[in-house]
Image 1 (cartoon, rainbow, N blue to C red):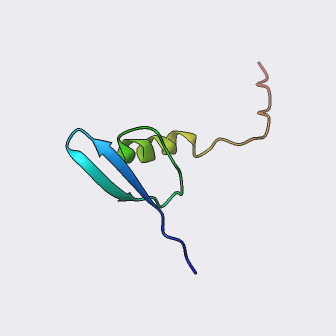
Image 2 (image 1 turned 135 degrees about the vertical axis):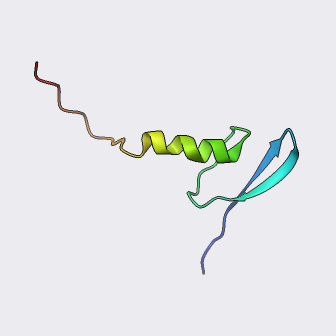
Length: 54
């Protein structure tokens, strides 16, 4: 059985319910902006980066 998750966001225009397709819980009040911000971290890895050679 698939689990469907939603995020409820209390915004200045009232309460909104969003499909939480990335399964992330956030305390940031504007959910769509938080989803956009996740793109900044798409390439992040737990591996140590190679030191640059100058």
